View: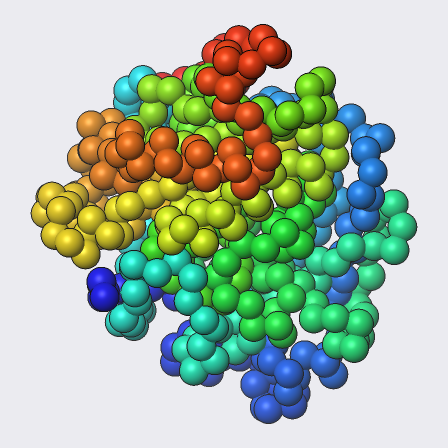
Length: 434
């Protein structure tokens, strides 16, 4: 059994001993938590998102990396997030963290976040097993305080979005999905999406939870708001199902990477799923886009993730451009680290390459690493994440079968001609200026 001593980032004030002033008046067990003792007798705000399983009439094509409208959900999320900041619930002020664009062709982003390196507790995590059972004895999100929750995020009963400032949580109608702050934020507006919190779901992708995450990206309607997911073995530090999200007002390097289409859905037409492979990027990755509905794209990605989980392949996911594009990163860094195959110079930086780092946002914990940050360092770090060519070909085969996609080689040998297309993800005017 491969193990590695992991020092997880604290994401809640109840993950370890917190200052008494950070906790509020309590219900149930006395801690006003999200567990069965307190949540079913609580009142929490509710955002009910537009619940349409059919083709959406809304036109999302106007959203781009320039002037773009901010939705009600973004206003709500950021307003609630800033209110928690004014109450001193966060462990540090992330807005004071230094950030810069690293000189070079890719425009990697570096942030100095020394506060994220403090107040941690050592834990043993297995890195050779993506699927592990939920353990109620370890930290989980039912233990966080309700003051850390911004609102519930549930499907509406019609094709409209609704907001209720306060509503009784009725556990009889199903376990609620909540949006909570990350008390050790990486960026402005850093939140956690916790699907069906009372169901004690382990950190593994399922269709319904991923569908909710896609809808959060759609409802936010802001291309600078991205969602990320880390599997076990790919630097998830808590084995309780959750997604992360935050705002960053520049394109991620991975979003600018050129791509080449390598597979697509068997049904031809503008509404089909298309999967591309990233080119000239240090990590082998796949980009999913297309589909006639949110469910089409969501299920294609979820099916692929479930296949990787079942085949014990760690991975990270980035939901980008308001849910219109999803990046899938299979990775092997933690396994190589446990086997002593990572250069000590890289290990000394204490950077765990999870979804944000792989996407090009380097969260550095030491001043010297931030001052010396270079494109060469970012490339070397991410190259250690990437699967070999042979392993990546196996991943593509898993994805093709799981999502019922046709590889380009099958098209070239079949009766339906198809020529893969190369493209750059962003228009020329969206290049990062340095």
